[in-house]
Structures are given as structure tokens and as C-alpha cells.
Figure (cartoon, rainbow, N blue to C red):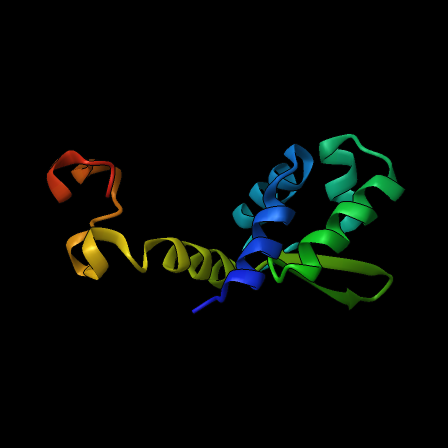
Length: 117
């Protein structure tokens, strides 16, 4: 379970449109990941801008990088997102998260439709 300072770091990393796009792109590529050059060309951003934002996501634990030959491959870390959801849901439904169904299909049947899903 994340603690508040780590959660703030993750939320800060997610609080930028390009970083959300990068993460979304990499989530589709799990588990293989994607080379930095392909991320850059897909999102049409400069190399320095991409490096800055990838570093931010990596520092927050949302992305991992490894070298493969001459490329750096970036991979999303889905379990980091699970940790964020768990952090947010820990007090859901009066501290009984088992009552909270997070699926969109059952959005109105739990917690009396009070926003807790």
C-alpha cells in the first residue's frame, strides 16, 4: 500500500497531459515496452521533452527502462497504478473496500450510488 508522500509523487507525475499520453501508450505495450525513439515519433515531441517526462514517470515508479542493444526500452508498471487505486479506495465504503465494486458496469449498485464505486 502506498503512503501519502509516494501517492503525491505519483499524482504529480500523472498531472501532465503528455505524461498521461506516454503512460497510456506504454500500457498498451505491456509487457514488451517501447523504444524511446518510437515513443518520440508516435507522440511527435522532441527528444529532450520526452526524456524529461519519461524521467518523471520513472521517478514515480510508473515506468521502467532497460537497455536493449542501442535502444532504451520503456515499459509501464501496471502494479504501480494498482497501488494508486488501492490508496484511493482504502477508506471506500466506510473502510470496507470489499463493498466497493470499481467496475463501470456496476457503478450504480454499490454504496447506494453515492460516488463510491
